[in-house]
Length: 293
Image 1 (cartoon, rainbow, N blue to C red):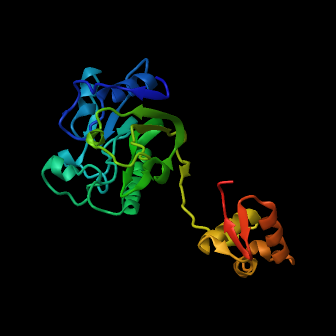
Image 2: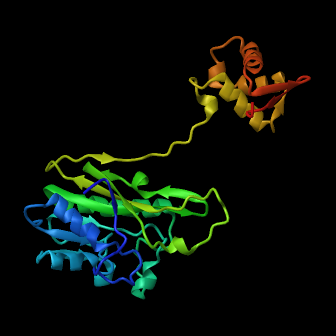
Image 3: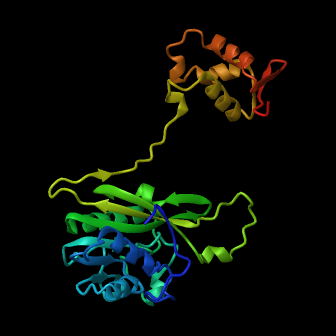
């Protein structure tokens, strides 16, 4: 197996009409990659959906596999994983992009594809992923297939925002084929269609101690930075002042910056930067931002 995989055909595995089903070749090849000489002692599939993993297990003669989903009454948020295992494959919803209530024909309150904020979805996914990790025996693997999404013009990277449990052993890119979005025509030529998914392989290496990795988004203000350049501060100030300002107007803003606190010659530094950088052009007493030069 290589770090980029592609399956143009999904194979005979699972219900082909079940939206979001991955190709059975993905699960089959992962099992054969990480368990080349013997089958997993126990294969557990979380979010088993349309039965893809079940069919793979049947083909590989894995007779003790367990496949869990709201379809068969298992609630990922409140129910326990009923068995330990050395191999868990999960393919969770990508937020609310596919409504699995419609797939099942009934509403379930703990469906991760229900209407909720992205932050709530990530919190719930973290709960499930931690539960999966703790169910593994030492040396076991949790392999999850997850995608990026774009909604209302914003890009969301689930793999970046969710917690990571255990040691990342491998990161594989899976090329997507026959996407629902392929049928759309986009008027925006700068739009980049998402044509890949991510497979993350997490390994449990220790019994008691485990690593977690959390991504935090921190909002900062460049006025509070000391390492930022004067050119960058002046550029931001001109943008804030609708692209035209006098030295005094620029000074009245930047004198409050942290970078100015240890400088007794802020006006002089502003003038020096304006005069020495080609991005700034002067007309009379007014300075303009001109990045085209």
